[in-house]
Length: 242
Image 1 (cartoon, rainbow, N blue to C red):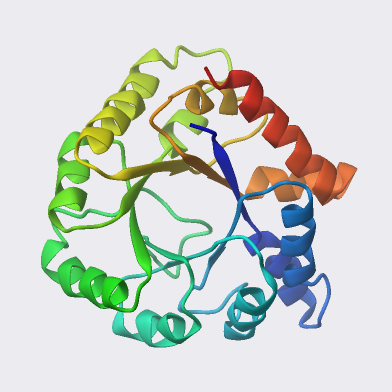
Image 2: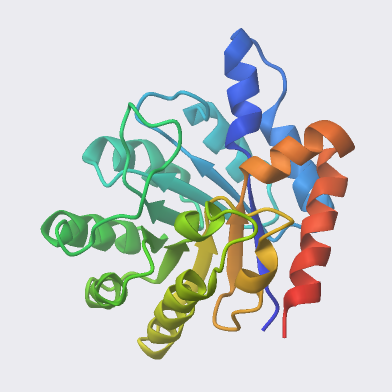
């Protein structure tokens, strides 16, 4: 199975919103990532619209030739904004106005009563649904029980480990969660905090179909350009894939 790269362009929009103008253009960044070989584009439509705007969803849906994945909170307001654009995927994530970025995975067990109708509504609109969860077996089981199409395993704890530390335990948790998800018929994605230095061991997990990476790619793009940044990541992923 070829490992796909989904490029998160949120922080291109963060730069745009910092000045309140029109540049840099997130849609242009998405097209550059696409031309460099990315197999998907991810954006997070937050309730406070701190970076990606509704207009961005509309234009991205019109121009992209690769799947669009929209992250959002599992709220009626988010669905009302997103469903009319019919993205290929919606990834349900926890969301807090106080956080700088998503902190931890969705608690699908605790929130199952709220998630069930949201997943049903999205799937009835022919939108595939992924749940962003920590690599915990019970969370993966609940995602399958709720009839999500996929889980995106949170690699944040792994990514935050010091470079010289032993990552065996955390990698084992991710690997076990991926294997369980595959057995349960879920599609497997992973992401959060991945970069050129730590992506290899995650890319080597054969059950994982796609990595969603944003911050490190956009940060690297400031130095070398977005197309080269994407190409470097694709090469690192391919090298690590068994």
